[in-house]
Amino acid sequence: MMRFMLLFSRQGKLRLQKWYLATSDKERKKMVRELMQVVLARKPKMCSFLEWRDLKVVYKRYASLYFCCAIEGQDNELITLELIHRYVELLDKYFGSSVLKAIEQADLLQEEDESPRSVLEEMGLA
Image (tube, rainbow, N blue to C red):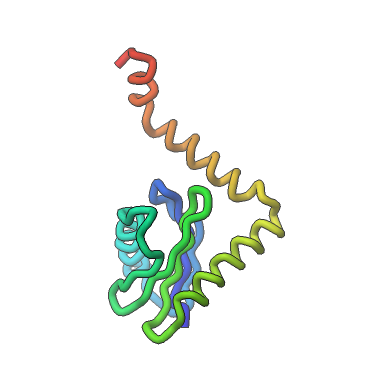
């Protein structure tokens, strides 16, 4: 059974969350923070499955978004990976391919806004 699904950006901004078991807000925030740190620290060539707490985590990166599902130990990781892919296809079909691109562009703009020093360094002014 799937416990929860998270969508977050490369910068660690949570974009969507769906929980399938009752969990307190405090515990949710802690779990989200921990899991984002673990997933974002992994290298691109690493396996998309990992053991975390008492769960299996399956994730896939599309554009600048990570789609991440936590499943129970006896569940199949490959089926979950396929579920993520189908969900992305559904979003793409319903909203058009511009949705993922728009989110990626928003993240890039936000990234530029948060680091004005790097812009000054590029111009040789810092």
